[in-house]
Amino acid sequence: MSTLFLADFSVIKPDFGLIFWTVLIFLVLYAVLAKVAWSPIQKALTKRDNDIQDSIDEAKRVQAEMAQLKDDNQRLLAEAREESTRIVSEAEAFAKQRREEAVTEAKEAAQKVSENAQREIANMRDSAMADLKKEVGAMALDIAEKVLRKDLKSDATQTALVKELVNNLN
Image (tube, rainbow, N blue to C red; front, side, top):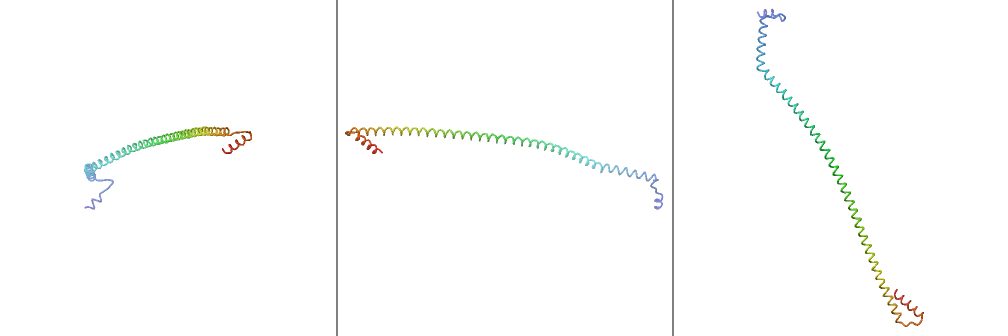
């Protein structure tokens, strides 16, 4: 009988019983799968979709933060460069000012030393001239005294005495 049943089977023209049982089994299987499998699968897919969207949103937020940090870093770097340039300029100006002050102080000190030396030289020269005048005066007095003490009778004797006194002085 089983051969008979298969002999009457036609795919193009199915029997009503076959259609009924196929639809019934399909509906029962669909209901069981909907209850048992598709609901958790749908929940898992929804959760995965939400997780992916959250990850995308977080990545966008992090990317925006990174862009902001990059801008802040660029701004801070530019400020640091400006500050270092300003500090170097101030240091150069200070060094130049100190150099000029040192040169001015050195010139003033050299001029004071020069003035003091010239003053001292003038004082020594004046002192030497005064000493020389005193000695010349003393010698003149010695010569005059010796000339007056000697009895001079002629011009030749006077000339010889003056020559002798001058030779004694040298």
